[in-house]
Image 1 (cartoon, each protein chain N blue to C red):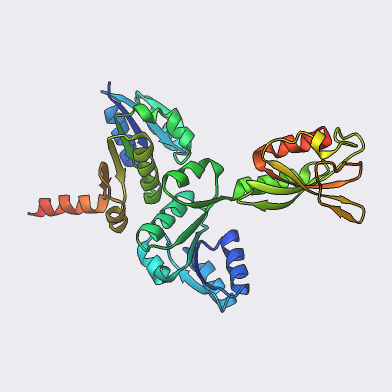
Image 2: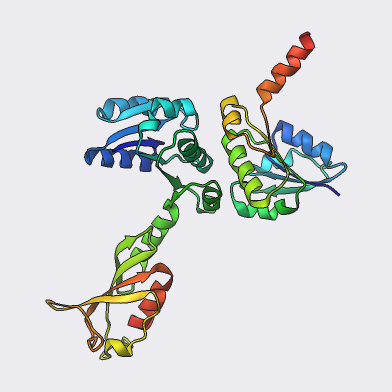
Length: 221
Length: 131
């Protein structure tokens, strides 16, 4: 694939290197001349373009009409919106992804028709919150920008679901128990399967009911 | 009374706000408190010290009741984005904004959005003066 990245900040740069490792063609645009010079010496197999990506000429220079994806990762939210709009309306790029720097600016992206805004600050905040919490819950996988998660919950002694079978446990809607890990056994549960202390329960849940699910399984949050 | 919201308290915004505030309700939005203070004691309107890219700020400024909105910051992209969002979300009839780059002005032109290019304007005036 050919991917154009606007903005060689932390996210843009790491992403460019990663995509290059995965054998994609990558073009990186930034408006800092010194940074561009350093990067062009350092990254031989990435095309570096110096210029303001909110100008169509610069995007054209990056051959954006040939791009499969545009990623707008500048530090200015208004610039990201404009870049995505130009890519879509002027150059008909199939997919435009934008980083949202300030979550307060997220509605702007939506009103301006940016399909894939990635609210990086909120995502990081959520991860940090998870890492900082002391519950016996771990998110194994996040899907669709964190809307669906697969979690592992360690069942403590005092849990309200201990010694109950699954049909006796009322789980919140939009959540389901996928499997139970007990010692070396992996159990795919049915209605009669009972939960014991020390079990590790794997569950799939929508983000808005995740807290309810944990409460049901552990008794507290 | 007419209600006007101005975003960007630079030279043009400041002068416009001072003049309009004599006859109508004016709200000035800027993220720089010093710029807001430059309006002085004579300014007979409301000042909001906040980020215009935050929709909350626009709500606080009472944008939905505004007759006219001016976007006069020095940032073309901000003026364009906020202008378009205001138009789409609140359907305000008169939105005027400064865009100093002519290419962007042409691309983002749309009905009901008055995009003013300072350079073009100056050139026009100068040409008229020399004729």
